[in-house]
Length: 234
Length: 234
DNA sequence: CGTATGGTTGAGCCTCCTCAAGCGCTGTGG
DNA sequence: CCACAGCGCTTGAGGAGGCTCAACCATACG
Image (cartoon, rainbow over all chains, first blue to last red; front, side, top):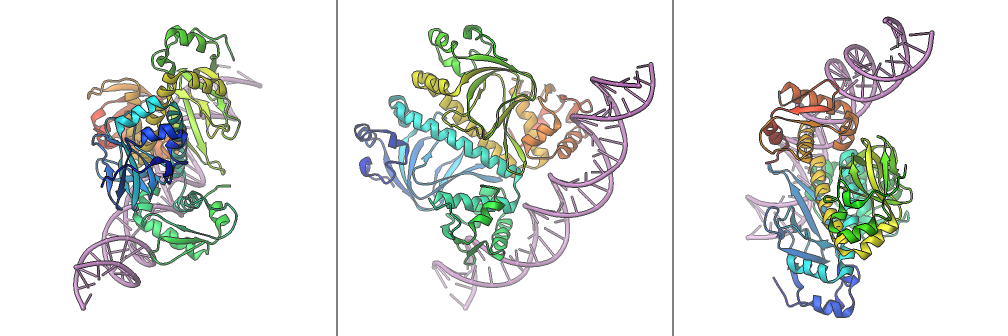
């Protein structure tokens, strides 16, 4: 589904996305090449191994980036939220399969056009560099977690991340979050199995640290401090 | 140990390091701020949590980047070889502890000077962007490995990487490599324990896929194809 | 009402970790 | 020159955490 380009000026993620580093005039020229696309949950926008065609900004919704082994084992190597940049610039072949977790609104650019934007707008390039460095930083954090934390710690850390992601108070207050994916995807993200994820959720519930309806995606964190202690964050 | 700046023009990594994107005149100005440092094995150049002071290029030798949990668990999140860039630009606090694996020659810049270089030399910034994207790519590959491969597969993949890193023939010929670190560091890199690493090395030897002297760092890969099959690479 | 889908829970097993002992080399001091 | 301590690596025994396999439950949907 491709719609006519929405005006960048009143874009929802005008300030948080890459384009935030542009002034109104520059934005106007960008809006001629950006195309909005709505993706239903599950829709794939890039297949690992295929030609790498598109770069985009997430306007609303969420995406997963999946890496996989030849024999089919999979790992979600990143989750993207509104304002995040999607794509692999300067690479002719996509390394990851990217697909929508929830209904998602994207602002898409053909990859090569996007690269020209970088040539022409140093501030965008600088912003992308900073974001890439920060993605690298979180990728390394996740390497530490995947290699050295046990199931309980990974789940706790995941919930803490979601909590911070939703712009929540770091205080000790109970807080409601929504897990934007199913148990299977949580497992793919944390390097566990569905069953282990389910058991650890249940255990956190039994411990009175969280509550949720059976099978539900909405979840109340009753004791954020306990969760933080388990996840070894300060 | 800080020496007078070596002339960039005859730098060993002139073509492979970031500075490769500069012409001779630009290089001349760079050489005024770059300082060469020799590090003995084990020397730390950046402590996680401390002020982030320095960016550098590896001229010779090798470094490890270590992330750790508050309780002391550690993970090597990257190994750096000649030509590689070291540092965390735009971040006031270092997230990683970086130290020398072997005797290492670095070309160092104060972090803020390095950031000015990026301001003034778009081609350097572009090169850094491409490298950061490629580091991100390998970090994601490693997330997949740490989350989804078993000990044998990780060891095999590690040896394959070393093989490729030493610019070796991809053919099926036997080849000698040198593991630039001890068993403990291999374990820290692969998310395993020393004992598991040692056992898997022994098992690969028993299977006739590799040979090495007891406790040795030099290692002959007798059957690279078998190794590649175990590591699931093509 | 039956099926499909996603989540939960249980039983058993396997891999890797933990703890411990032993080996071989290096360097040092008597 | 030899004894001995120290270090890094190897190997073994035992245990635990997470995976596999399987059954069961709840909700959504035709």
